Image 1 (cartoon, rainbow, N blue to C red):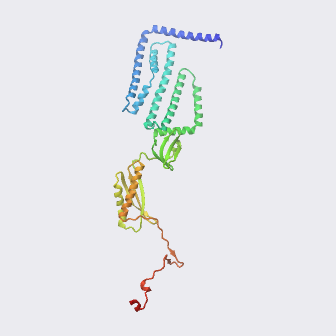
Image 2: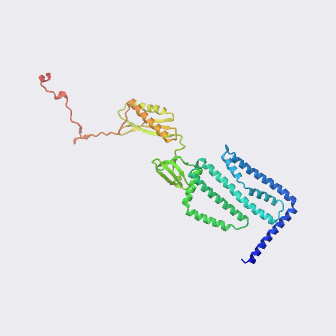
Image 3: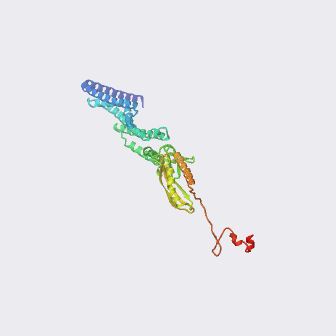
Length: 392
């Protein structure tokens, strides 16, 4: 561009600025009454918006004992910008004071920009506040908290991109090509990273549905352990044998997961066998003996105990009782104590536990049983027949 062209552009721009100021001056002098009335109304609206913003700031400072939703709305109101309040008041004045087209156009553009960004900020605070409300304060320092940080970034980018598109559309820019390009680019990225996005949405499902949380004891397939970290793509579980099991969020949610954290009680099943020679009256007393032992513990409830079948070498019994504790260590200690007490009670009442035994019978070719020991001769049969010897 030559110096002459540059000078022409500068002169044209300065002329537009001068014309704008001239129109503004004539408008101010010719509509002073309307401008004062509209300004008063605009100032009143601005003060109301400032009061609402101040109320949100006050709720944030005195948020102790308040509901979480009140804090979310307070934070949303507190993020109301001063620029938006000024432009909302100016737009109200411009619409009711016969503003010159050039001045009204400038105020309208600034108001559209302020309103679009302010709406994006409000919606962002509501969405993120709801997500943080669902996550809870316990996960603020966990890996799930960092996942929420990434989600916060994605929500912010999406909302402000929509705000920019709306601004361009209100300014008369054709955004059809831009929207189509963004849509095609989004589809391409989604197809290329569909595995990552599936795990991302699985992480969102964990946030909102909360099938398990960090520190919960869970079981899936053949793995039982404690959840250590919940990330954006994977979940890390410390199994009972000490290994760290890493599984993707999408795969984990597709499986049946057993969560032991919210158990009201754990049911214990014990089976034992007694010898066949046990007296029938003693067998009938076994359930009551076991019930007394189980009922003697504070956090246990007897379900049932009785004979369930005839084993190859034992009379089989089954004992079921509930331990009202979610801590597996307490359940383990209670089960061990009950087992020892049953063993002592059975010994005191001469009740014998059975153990695997097997008897083998050997037969001769003619079918007669062959004893595993030599035949024993009686003393009378082997005694001498002489009476004199018998007398001796």
